[in-house]
Image 1: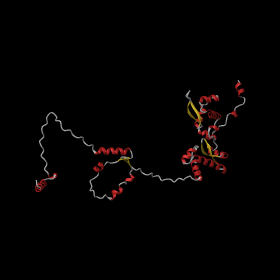
Image 2: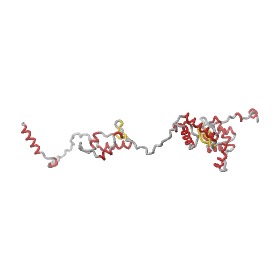
Image 3: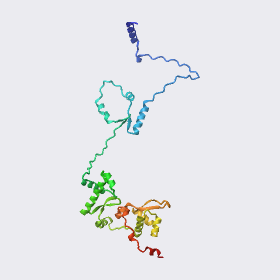
Length: 308
């Protein structure tokens, strides 16, 4: 075929081509009667998973955590509107789009940046000077409700334990030298402010207002037995004192001077011991500071034992 004939045939085909919207609809063909036996038809290909399932999976991941899976190129192409390649991006869209540096990518997942903390940052003193360290210790010791240890103070102020201990000793010596009405003492394994003994009468007058609550002789004796024999059971207390100590022991527990500390393995009876408040009230650091019992024992023990 020559080039002229080929050009004429292409021109004829172009002239005879009718666009789809101008074509006449085909006449429906009469349906053929179906036979009783079902005819096997061609196997239909698996239907593609709709995009809604993918969107639901993405929404589930969004609700589960703060990591967002990155969209594939096919999904972005299918979801984005068709635009001309040379069409400029509007300024408003470009300004609202996040910069790549704000969204770090880890593997195939994209991490959403968290909101900044709205609380303002507080500038704390560096505590390089001893005066600043002493002031920080005083501020903490004024709000504690029980003796606080040097280790906890060192962790709070981010300072060595040795420096904290030296600062506490320096503060205590300074309060004593200047004659303050309060003192910084070590008690019950920690440090706390206490009023001085010479001003205790005025403090009691202000707090008690004429009402004095004291422990009875039986409570003091029971407390002494618990302090020196702890941990001890009720039966052991009764054997030492010679009387039933249940009511007195309940009073000491209510006052916070004695507490339960488990059970005895053999009998299952409750064991009792003194509390931190007991050490604090007596001004002791540990139970080793209790006075020895030997000077208070009678010298004629054999005669007392042989007596009827």
